[in-house]
Structures are given as C-alpha cells and as structure tokens.
Length: 258
Length: 314
Image (cartoon, rainbow over all chains, first blue to last red; front, side):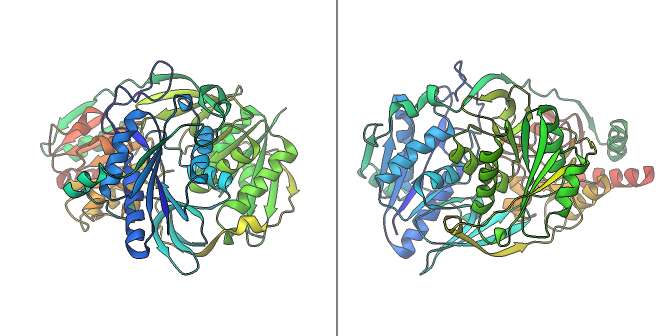
C-alpha cells in the first residue's frame, strides 16, 4: 500500500505567533516546525508500511524553509518527499491550497493519504474533505485508529463522546488525532539516511496548475484586519493561610458564579 | 430580506447560538438532515429561536454513511435557494458539510467564527486566541462554521414554515460506511466545548482517584471537567477531556485551573475564557499571570473549603 503523508511547516505554537503586515502568517519571524499532528500522521504511515509494505512519500507545499520539515519527516523513516514550492502560491486560501495538493497527488501513486486532523496554525480541519472533493477519493477524518483489511480500511473516527467505526475502500484520505500513536524520534541513523533520500521539488508548471488559480488574487477569503489581543492582566493573587477556599468562594459569588 | 441558512447537526446550545447569530443577517432558514423521526428537537428549537423556515430532510440511512449524504442535501438546497450566507457548527460534522459545500459551490469558507456581520465580515480568534482577526469571503457567499460560546443565545419565538425536502443517497456518497457508533457514557455534565463553566485539573491533582475532587467542584459549579495534557498523559483523566493546543479549545464564562502550571500548550486552549481562576502551590506558576483570581495553596485544602462554601450558599 503506497501512502502519501501531508506535512505542513508551521510556526512553533510554543512561541509567540503573529501575522505580517500583509496579514499572512509570519513564517520568517518565527521558529518553524513540523505540525504537531503531522508527526502522528507520519508515524501512522510508517506503522502501516511495516505491516503491509509499500512506499511512504511526504508531500508538502511551502516556501524554501520547509525543506527542514521534510528532512525531519524523512529522518523518521519516510522513503521520499515532494516539495511543491512556487512563489506564486504564497497567500493562497485553503481552497487554492487544496487544488495544489490535489494536482500534486494526481502525479503520485497512492492508495492512502494521511494528514493531521488539523494544522496548529490555521486549524481549519477541512483539507481532507477538500481533497476528497477534488480527487474523488473517500475521506475519513479524525482517526484514532487505522487498520488495513482485505476489503480496504477500518477506521475509528473519534467523536466528542465516543467513536464511530468507519469502513472504506481505497483510495482514501484519512486524518488523524494524536490519540492514534506516539511518534518515534528520528534516530541518528535515520537522520544520516535522510540526507540521501530522494527529494523532488515541483513548481506550478510541474503539477499543471494555472497561476490564476492560486495566490492572494485567487483567494476566496481575505483577512481584513488583525489585532494582537492585549495580554491578560494578572488579577488578584492571595496566599492560602487557611481561608483560601472561602476567599475563592467569595470571589466567585461576587462575580455571580455561585 | 435575504435568506440565511443555519445548518443544525443536533439540537442544543450551539444550535441556539447559531440561530441567534443569524437573525440580524436575514430571514433564517434552519436546515435539518436526519434519519426519519430524529428531528423533533431540532425543529422545535428552530421555532424557539426565530427561524422563518425549516428545511427538513428526513432521509432513511443518512447516518449509515460518513458525512457526504448530508453535505449533498445541503448543497442541493443551496443551489435551489441561493442563500446569502450559510452558518454551520464548528463540529466535525459541521466542518465536513461546510467543506464539501464550499468546494462544490465555489464559495469561500471561514471556520471557527465568533461573530458575523451583515456585510459578511467574520471575526476569528487566531493563534489560539493570541490575536483577533476580521476576515471576509471574497468569492461567493460566506460559508462559516461557528464556534461554541461566541454569544449568548436569545430565544425569539416564531412559527416557521416547514418545508419537507425529498432526498436520496447517491452511490458516490456511499464511499465511507459507518458500521458502528459507540457512545461512551456522558454523564450529567455539560459538553466541554459548550460548557459555561469548566473546572480543569493538572499534574498537581496527582492521581486518577484524586480527580474526583475536580469532578466534585465541576458539579458544584454546574460545569464540565477538563484536564491538562500533563494530566491526560499521566493517565489521570481520559484524553478526550484535554484542554489545550492539541486537545479541546474552550472559552467558557468561568475557567478554574487546579494544579495546572499553565504551559503555553494549555494556555492556548483556555486563554479566551472570560474569567480565569487558578489554584496552585507554586506562586511562580505562569497560570497566575492570566488568572483574574489566584490562590497560592494546596488544592486539596483550598478546593474542599471552596466546596463547603459553595454548598453553604445554595
């Protein structure tokens, strides 16, 4: 079973993040890392590969700096990577990005696409559906378990109060939550091997996407303004000297919570 | 007046909030797609919250396939009635329907919106609440998913015209079958994402058994229970209750953090709460920098005393 894992380089959510003057995500001024849930997607792909064979390909769309993210993905054990990189893609909305990814997927051979359930920057969580609509593949999202069977795939889709068992044939696009596994750390051997693994760079012409379909001009949504929320001001802090619980109750009563 | 669609996946607090948010934007049409006989509550709620119309598609087998049959019904209705905006819940079903609808109709999509004005400008919290942005859909009409707890739902009684929608499930909508639905016991507490009060415990709670104290405080305040990642990773509380960057984002009226230091991963999931209260032994814990009221002390002393005082006031 050949698997493509979608990986997105995002600003580190552990540090301060902001928009640039042109109201796109500031990727220069922040420490860029592999999306947290993407690591779980890679791990899920590698585990399926260990049991069922096939190739694991990393696919990412992003600027030059995304190469770091790709190397880390390869160091974890993926076989090869495709980096779609074209200045004309900058400023694309989710819809345009989905067209780019779908066009790249068209050039790859795959039975299964795995992604994180959402990115840690925009966090929309809609990409699997958009790709399903473009590619005609099935979409099953929010997986906490993926099993390959003779008929296709069995997936546990995590819901707010339990889970649903889904069955689908391939090709399929599946997104995963962090409950699915614990991602491995790249070994030193993996890091060394990653440097020699195939990494292809494709531009819009390679994937036959017209420049008019991507970028800021084609975007279906636009950010009009953004303001940093002022930091919360610390309120009153008391030290418990035997009355802390009562003091807290008084505060909650004064705010009409009790 | 323009027609605005509100897609209701299930009756409840978020549905009431969406219907309230949609009223200033136009004539509200609730769109309900369900198995036959499963829609009474949602229909009643549409009337309670001022819908002018209810499109009701009762389709046998709609729940046997993952998301697509519902999205197909909404897409057909959209094409027929050309609403000026579509509001959907920011739930996994709402986002799925929104995504398929946006792609098949060529309209822009905004998710996790907390406000929407008549010009179609939407407000979103970005970077886990660190910034607030205003966005608009520049192609077509806005398709937006609405975040829970964004506004106070206000009833406005109406007698909506009920339109029965005929629909069937196409072969292409049957790619993913739902073969089993497992609902874990939910108990009497409100849903974490919708709760007005959330009481969360962290590593400082110390064990799964001792989380009972967090549950007791949540129950006394009528709230939901949450947990930090440190607590869920340690197995003190189930993962689905994790509040934070990789868990659930909550924005209740009151958030109580007990035994939680306030790592950025946790703050990202709760810092837009209206009032934040923290109890922690460590006076230097970062959680105190965003708490409206903090108690430096042992949570096993402070919370039981809080409980006594809450009970005494009832």
